[in-house]
Amino acid sequence: MGKYAVEMEDIWMVFNKTIVANKEVNFKVKKGEIHALVGENGAGKSTLMSVLFGIYQQTKGTIKINGKEEIISNPVKANRLGIGMVHQHFKMVDIFTLWENIALGAEMTTAGEIINSRKIKNKITKIMNQYNLRIDLDKTTANATVGMKQKAEILKILYRDADILVFDEPTAVLTPQEIDGLLQVMLELQKDGKTIILITHKMAEIKKVANSATVIRLGEVIGTFDMKETSVEQLSEAMVGRKVVETKNDYSPRSEEVVLKIENLTMKKVSNTKVIGLENFSLDVHAGEVVAIAGVEGNGQQEIAEAITGMSKVYSGNVKIHNHDITYASIASRYSKWKISHVPEDRHKHGLVLDFSVSQNVVLQDIDNPKFSQAKIINSGAVQAYAQTIIQKFDVRNADAGFAIARQLSGGNQQKVILGREITRPTDLLVIYQPTRGLDVGSIEFIHAQILKAKKDNRAILLISYELSEVLALADRIVVLNAGKKIGELPGKGAKREEVGKMMLGRED
Ligand SMILES: Nc1ncnc2c1ncn2[C@@H]1O[C@H](COP(=O)(O)OP(=O)(O)OP(=O)(O)O)[C@@H](O)[C@H]1O
Ligand SMILES: [Mg+2]
Image 1 (cartoon, rainbow, N blue to C red):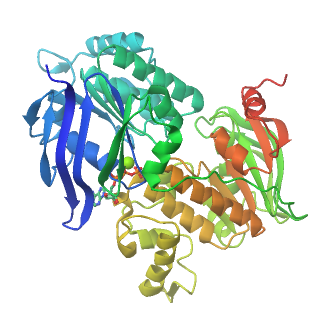
Image 2 (spheres, rainbow, N blue to C red; image 1 turned 90 degrees about the horizontal axis):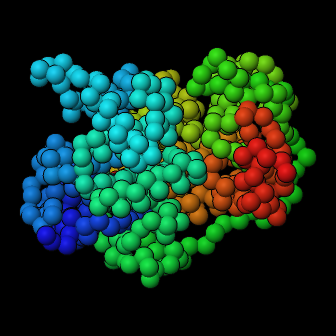
Image 3 (cartoon, rainbow, N blue to C red; image 1 turned 135 degrees about the vertical axis):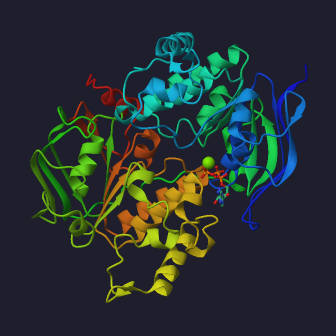
């Protein structure tokens, strides 16, 4: 038996003959280790793993699995070689139940025809118990939370008996509690002899579970590091090629002017309209201040954002902008007349039109502006020039001067397009939901600086984030939500992580 589970040698991946996503990559993963794969947004991590999983054919280079050279022509072949991948964006059929998705394409049948659901569920249940990964298998996928879907994706690869498990940013959409659970599962899997490749931007996770880490930058390997001997700072520096400094609010005073006023807002839950998701919630956000909503996911954050942006109907209470009631205003008027910017939680569902170009995506709400169109004729030159300024400023990689289709961009770069669009639009209120989800450490630093610049420009910012470190770095005021209610508020200056964490869990002691 050889030492390596995966050996990728001199891998090149070139898209459309021009975009070099991977260049001369040598990537080796020892059997039984947890190996982190890290690098900036667009560095080529997902692409490299898609080559390993047979989604793309490398332009050049060889792959050995367990010491034997293999041509991985498609994911079915990858499965047969014992490779499983949990993708950055989930791939599931919404109208199926979770167990149907887990077994999809690998169903156990009776008489070669009939799907044996009992046998399938038994096998899944065994795996769930073995790794402490429990979900309600009969739930329809459309009604499942991201955490459940994530678990289903993991069960999917374990169900196929994979030995080499690739996780592409599995924690980007999870809450801190779920992340701890997942890391525990990974250690369990490792104990069982599985080999794990983990893509993540979160250094703390790497420190917790990874034995080694390979850094790629602009498609090329910078080096492989033994995590026993490497600090988080060294790793970040290798990733971005410079020192990363944390951005912090200077707590300059806000202005008197109230931009957003929420009064006694009650909302049904977005995920289940039979129950109340937010109760009697009131909040003012002034010009020149960052108010952060902290809380565990699912405690009313989504409901607040949807009431302000008009995505859900308000049950009772009011939302006012500059003292004008907009509770029932159209979505279009909120974006234009009432000058709201919105970075949505789900970038694929609500942030981008994935099959539009980057340029088209950058003017989605503003296409009627005479700058961009007149008499219904789009001034594509002006649109493109505008897109180009955003691409440059927000460092959107491989956007092909705005011609690239949004779907082709790496996940982090898609996020930068949305942030660039929403921060650049001349608005008074920014509703920013999980802004740095999936961003690399260098980009997080940049985005945080942009949010604080918006404060300096006397804009009002409502930040909704599950990342406590983000809340603590940016907020002038922290409002804590629990079970749909505001359970406390404290100034950002001097706020302690433990204090806010405790409040998030609903304890006021
Ligand atoms: N199908 C495709 N066609 C054209 N270009 C592509 C395609 N897939 C990826 N790319 C480009 O290849 C580069 C690497 O993308 P990749 O998704 O591998 O980055 P990543 O390291 O996973 O980044 P992130 O951290 O943002 O997920 C990107 O610049 C992207 O635009
Ligand atoms: Mg990726």
